[in-house]
Image 1 (cartoon, rainbow, N blue to C red):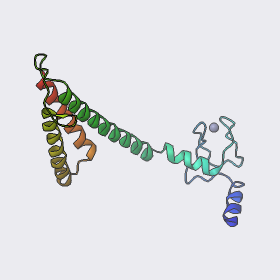
Image 2 (image 1 turned 135 degrees about the horizontal axis):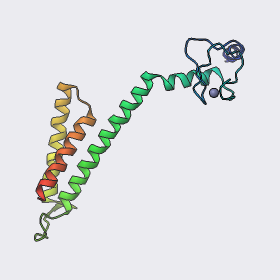
Image 3 (image 1 turned 90 degrees about the vertical axis):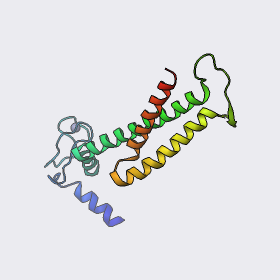
Length: 158
Ligand SMILES: [Zn+2]
């Protein structure tokens, strides 16, 4: 631990190496070759480790991975919201303003809601199997089911 610490301290006295890339954590200025640990562009001080992390964070690979992860999370969230909303509408809103009677089959679940739940569970099972053969992500499966549920819900009330 002490050796590692002194090694790190010695590195801070050497010029910033060209590889791996070091960028200013504040303004992304390329710090290669600098002996001082102060950015000539914005005047902020930095350590090599901070500058290395900054370069990794801003690299195209990491950025595209972050974008892909966000997009994936967005599809998953949208799919879940659509499924839950469709279920809620089917379960609690009676079709047509004339039919107000809702048949509860257990707890808060109505007949229509129970059928919807079966449909969702079967879709998830089929999605899980298809996922295995076609290498699609769970977020795509959830979004597809969510869109299908939403369409079904809209059609039911037309
Ligand atoms: Zn800077």
